[in-house]
Image (cartoon, rainbow, N blue to C red; front, side, top):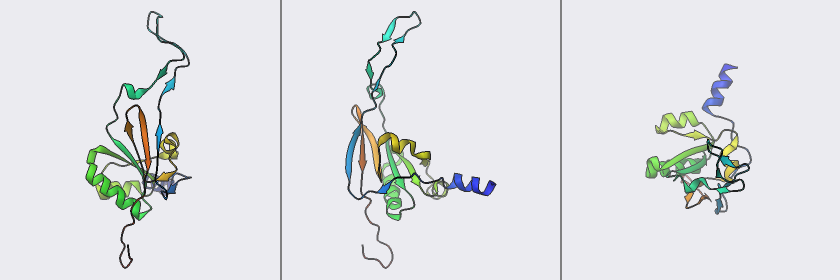
Length: 156
């Protein structure tokens, strides 16, 4: 009941179908949409004809990078921590697994969780950590390798 509800807020169900990045790769995602119905002004004049292709990136600039990571993996955790320390407000950290509330409290940083993997699916992300950022008229998606963190008594 209540305890499980609180637990699911503190650590939501991990996004399924993601692997840790083993082979780094880059892809591009075009957010353009084709207009199905003409858009009219209040006098009934066509302002955007049916069939037009509109790219929202022609009108907005996305200044922040999104960083998707799985906080259950110590290497990704350390990688995200460093990226947030370096980029500050230039990064929006998005968890796909792990204790989001505990991390926010520990790091004193606003974190997001990709509930139900909506963003991961939209950007076609299959491996994490992954960066998503604007590259001109498209979004660039970089699935990157988190460097291994040296652990006590282990060779790095």
